[in-house]
Image (cartoon, rainbow, N blue to C red):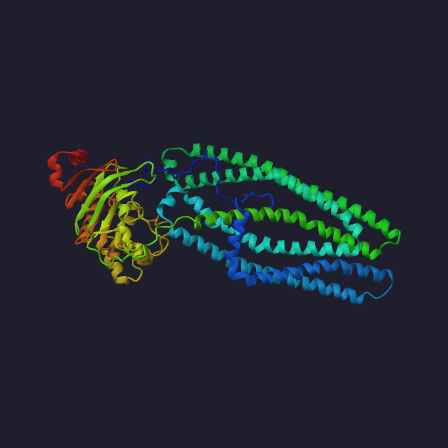
Length: 611
């Protein structure tokens, strides 16, 4: 579009700023040593996630029960091992206890297999629900929202953040349940076996928790910085790849490489510091656990020598010490993963909580087949309310007339079209269609009343036929062919490998710009909307193709209200009304002949194009 929000001086830039230091939303799953992003409202987000699981709680309950059974098998096995040792010491039969122990190990394997399978199924169903909800929410958002956010950032929320949640639900949550049951069950058994030894073993646990807290305080800001730099690097790669033709045409390959190296070096330095501090956790915790194990071994050995406890109790307790201390470090890592997943959920909910497009009024009416009279009544608008781009515009477009908007880039032409289609609502004034405010109509039916051909053709990864029928999915193949012929696209379509069944990839990158534009014109012709908008429809084609498109445009606009935006003034000479914009205001309007006679802005524009 010629004066889209990203191009307007009043609109904040949507391009990526490599110097930005604000939080980015890229990055992958939170693993041990991976960036940890802390949510702003942990409890509130958890409550909303809990609401999301409402339809899946039966499956989660089964996983919870299996986790309890799995933890029970882990808790009981040291007791049975101690019993085996006692039986051996007493020289009694151990066959029955060994059989129990073997059965317990087999049951543990089966329980773990069932838990993982069930958790994966439940987790993916929850993630499916989240992804669908987020995508539906994004579909309902107004264009103003997308003007304020990078597309890469939004894609990250739909992919990376949901993947983080998937990993947490499918893996970490199940493990957290097992660890919780294991810690509680182990502590109960330890207290039952020996209260003094339990008190001694808790010393090492307290030291591990203190270590985890200290290391986490150091690593959290480092990982946050790592995440920001990673987001900058991702953004740099995205804009470099998408703009590679521009980079090469201006010979800026080395400059982009230098920027990448600078960002990569920053990421390397930050990640090294974060990983170094994070790496202290495991060896230090192992050292503390080994010290605690040694302390318990010495104390239990003294107690056994004095006859206070048996050798089987010593064996069981030492196994419990190992089993009791191990989950705490893993829980600390799971908590980091959990924080990142909740932060991702928080960003998802931020999108879901965004104000959607205005809802239809209770008394809104449908637009069935409008006559097409459009009236701008003292309309003012700005993408940024503090910097208006349309200033008090009043204009009447008679029904069935062909109207052309002309003016310099950024003068407000495309913004006027965005207001007519209700992509935005005016900040002041109103726009009438057939005498009624646009806001009195149902949004869906209003949009169906318009057929648009934009400056940048938009094609989807589907067949040529499906792309033409995008606005009318129930169209027959004959109707699709007729629309393509009317647009002058049938010839090159038939030359494609599979004709109308050729699948377009990369937005139709294998086609020329003009061929892509012809497909969008065929799409608009097939939609047969009563009001037609052509925004620089011939800007990307040669003069021969332009004549074909012009003939198609005449057929498409015949008997319909049409608004044409064009820089090639030769294509709009036969318009019923030509409106000249400058800096968001109408400076002239009339027919081609009347405007040429006045010798004003339009006449000078025509003379400049002839020169």
